[in-house]
Length: 61
Image (tube, rainbow, N blue to C red; front, side, top):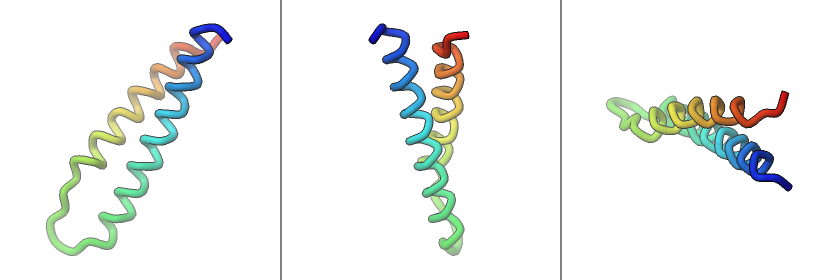
């Protein structure tokens, strides 16, 4: 295994994990009444997009 393949797998798995965390937080928000703390959702979704871009950079053409 070369280093670019390992980086691709790590960034892809991190993107999937962060998207699922953001989805879970959004489900929790839908059940809450009143004000909610959205920092976990915002950071998870933002970093999921960043790791998606990193995955795209490591993908071999």
